[in-house]
Image (tube, rainbow, N blue to C red; front, side, top):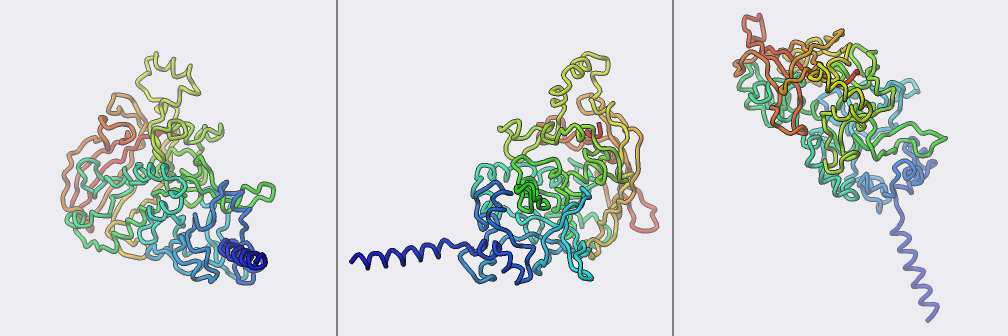
Length: 469
């Protein structure tokens, strides 16, 4: 009887051990095996991932797939993967990657995919962008199903709050419903193409296909964030620090993540250093390249040290970040803020005097061209960069003087326009700060008489500047 019980216990224990085996770590944790399969660069141990993520999560809790399967195809089925986006059609490449991401020294293009050439790995010139695996392969926007199954399974409150945040809902840019939106006006970044094809085509003098509209929208979506854009910060392995490597996570997003995390000029890098021209990082992010960074960068004052978030105010909601940061000046400069408030210059914002040289766009025009290899009536011609020695000051809606960088804008082939010439504000003052910007624009008019691509809707972009202090 005892022998039978022992045998039964042994069989049960063996079955439980087999069930507990994880094919992810069994395969990827074996470097010799991975190298024999030709994927040595993807070898990683569970100890490495735990040290870098600071989490006890198993592989499938972040990557999905099926760790109970030893067959590669079955184990990988349903797995969320890195999205490598091709320059052709901005389509996600479906072929398996042979090499892991590599890391360079240029802050703007720090992380990139590679391919083999002449026996060496080189940057893959066919790639337009990379997005982390919580993005949708069809739209390149957030994949909330994947986020809920992965990050949301351990962080349900944060996922719920994020899902309703301005960043998750693309709450600002999605309000620009075409070039003729009466509430928001035309915008340098272009309209929100999704859901607005019919109304835009009605006022466009040349054909606009659903395919070109989808590609335009995909280009927009590469900037709009998921969980990993803020909290995932992959780096080259550091032998002296096991917490640094390709699985590195951060609880508080570093300032680099606000600028795209080293994956080109995306997220806030474009709006701050190209459009506004007074960005936080400057350097390789600025256009022309090499503009001075904000003084707070050298002082190691990061984005979330000034901009309110759940780091400083938990009630604001996860992923909500307050654009207006004037209150933060008094935390470090209390005496200066006090004397300024009592001076004759009290109606000037701090930035009005402290921002000097600005860079970025000097003129931007939307017209017929090719986007990702497909013809579109709306390609952004933007390679007109330069410097403005000092910003222009205008009064905002509350009567305070603020700095702006005016530059001309045009969109071609427009039939009509509902706007009146003059100064307009993107968002009314009555909106709460979390729902508005302090940006303006000036409508010039709808002009005909062009030899082609008639007519042109003209305006002056006038975004408020806040960095480069």
